Length: 203
Ligand SMILES: Cc1cc2nc3c(=O)[nH]c(=O)nc-3n(C[C@H](O)[C@H](O)[C@H](O)COP(=O)(O)O)c2cc1C
Image 1 (cartoon, rainbow, N blue to C red):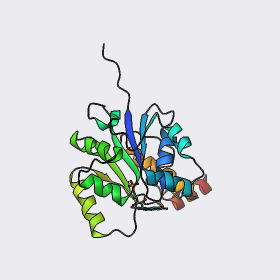
Image 2 (image 1 turned 30 degrees about the horizontal axis):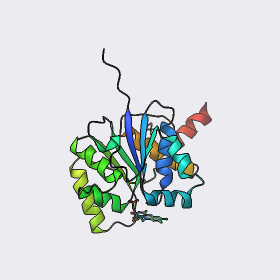
Image 3 (image 1 turned 135 degrees about the vertical axis):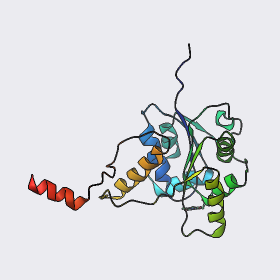
Image 4 (image 1 turned 45 degrees about the vertical axis):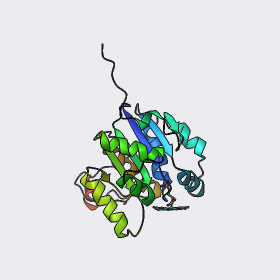
């Protein structure tokens, strides 16, 4: 009899500012039943230490499995390892360029290349500001291949109270891309805040 297949998601974290997005994603998926397969670049590790109080080991412990960035023989290097796709959060311009040009010289680039050849879902939480033409052309090229370009741009309609709310909302929307819907934050329900206040006052 056929066994149910685990939902496996490949998670890359690269050296753009905002490593917290990759960390939060792992935290949200931890214990959710989704297998996370993590690869961090050298500069992701460096940025993590600069921007958060987490250690690389603590972040790796959040994942189901963690791989070395130069481990080209890892399971996620092959299309025969079935996954629902890959997210890179945050995604640096260097990694964006490597993926757009088909380079496979580290495990993040290789795993993303495999996702593209297998026509699976790739979500890039690209982070740079401002963008130059090379960045924009690389994004357009990949978007035309079906890659989701999802920069960590905050929403304000959900009335975030702090940075944590913003990070949670963006991360929830990244996870939504894989049809994994964790209702960790309020979603837009079509009702403006002042209307809600008025309703509450009249009740
Ligand atoms: C603190 C810090 C912040 C950085 N922020 C960004 C960024 O937002 N976007 C980006 O493309 N590169 C950023 N970089 C530069 C990348 O880390 C660098 O290009 C690196 O080679 C990326 O390699 P990777 O894609 O393998 O992680 C940052 C570097 C540091 C040290």
